[in-house]
Length: 165
Image (cartoon, rainbow, N blue to C red):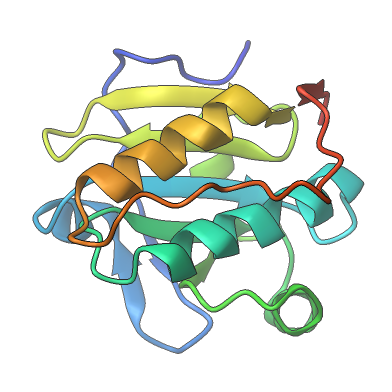
């Protein structure tokens, strides 16, 4: 079964975060949209994607859009990934034995991104790397920020349009 698609209701998840605070999707949605970015530390496409999500996070620090990584690995491996790729946005841990959150969202490949609207519906579902979808996430962050819109990609970035996860 493929990942949940846009228009579907986002399953409510409550997960432990790396910083020790619990992440609860319904509570986060009360403040604005949430991007759930499911990943595995060994995934090369995840390793390519997360620095761009970090760029979005840093470009719009006052955005109502909250980016949350959801790791399919244990805390130690996830902390190493966060350090190596310079991730400063919150990261939550899916249970690496049962994958309850990943299964609820029908994750079959990583990275998989879900942009969840405050009403709890999935606005964007993206599997693998999609330049257009990541640009849509950046536009959403920019639309809910007081900062001027900034380009996500630089002239030096050689970013493919799509790469399967």
